[in-house]
Amino acid sequence: MAPTDPTTSPSDGLSLDRLWRRGLDRYPDTAARYRYLAVAVFVTIVLYYELYVAGGVAPLMLAHFKMSFIYYVNILVVSNLVGAFGSLAAGIADRWGRANLVTYGLLATGVLAILTPAAPNKATFAVFAVLSGLVEGMCLVATPALVRDFSPQIGRASAMGFWTLGPVIGSLVVSFVANRTLPHFDESWSSQYYIVGVVGLVAFAVALVGLRELRPGLRDQVMVSMADRALVEARAETAEREADLRNPWRQMLRLNILAPALGVSVFLLIYYTAVAFFTIYLTSNFGLTTAKANGVNSWYWAMNAISLVIVGVVSDRLRVRKPFMVGGTILAVVMTYVFLTRTTHPHTSASTLIWIISLLAVGLGVAYTPWMAAFTETVERRNPALTATGLAVWGWILRIVVCVAYFTLPYVVGAMDTLTRAPEVLAAAKKVPPGTPPPPALLQELGKIKKAAADAPHQWQHWWWVCIAAEVAFVFLMLPLAGRWSPKAARADAEAHEREVARLTGSAE
Image (cartoon, rainbow, N blue to C red; front, top):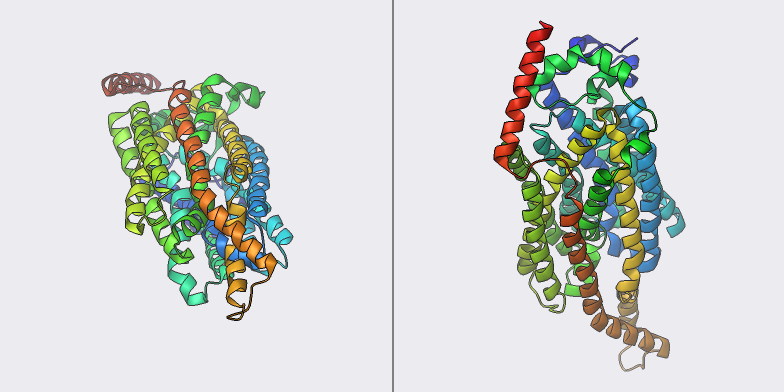
């Protein structure tokens, strides 16, 4: 028996059955649809806040655990590898739904965040980080699937722009909270985990009560606009019976899905570098404090968030995606190059860095939101009943690319392992009594740090060139996506669809 539509039974809001059975029998009206989308976006923000909190306090955490830069990077590698297969596992959301996967994922990550400061050693910390990566990999699939379900194609880019605020605002919150609270907690990295853990449990409570999803018959159809609502509801029973769920991976492993998924994954190399390493990079290369580096990072994430939403609205208005991807990529390439040139100028001011990374963030946002919309529309064209499977393919490729990138980065920027030990070595040097020769081992370490400080900027430039090459590759790999280049042709397609829906609706009546 199909579950009751919660929108028609508000008195059942706290029933235990409803806390597990979350399906809607009817497509919600605009107000309810926005409410479900808002909850999906909110929980996505919190999930990414939990995942990215380590990047905001990495220098302090490495010092606490006496963890090398390479050890920290290897944690990220394993976390992303496990997360990749978590993304594949989340393909079951096409059969079993999305909402419970997200809700109880929030519970798991909230508890893990609160337990992390109690980790007695770096190995235990690594286990907590890998488990969080597993949950993130699953939610990377389930949350955009929910947003797709509640957003017709006309309006999809706007909805995906808000979904993409999840990782971006999650990163912004990490930087903002660290910048404002670390000085009040004596630069204690554990404070950030306690804060994010409490926020995660609050989000779990919100999702437990407020997160819902469409029943399979409704979500297994392509919905171009809200005008299709009556037709989609009328076809729900038939769509549920006729949904082709056989060989789901074989159906999704096609060029127009694989190539764009790979393209956007390499395009986001600089984004994931920012998530994990911008704080370390800014503190070691430009001499900023951890709190100040997070203040600079806040501008990057804020500008990225604003551009994601604005370009989504404009893309829906013009009904095209690919021109925005090209324009955003051009801006991203130019600003990544400018960023690269400043690497060998350690006295670059914080305000200059803010301008550079803000424009870089805008370029990434202009390209990414239309890509998300176009990718889900391409998956729908293949089989709308396998949306989560298509997103699982993307999630797997993305995490594998990030895994390979994080594994490679320490070999490209080898000096960072030495520089992350610099605070400990310099503290030891300060303890040497005046007039006393420093121990030979300490002098050797100081020599290594001096050499690493000279080598690191040039090594980082090599990595930024890799990011530029990846951004250029994206333009070619996104070409197989569905969608028009011309706004005029896109409007003609929409008008033809509206006439067809009116004809079918009239025939049904």
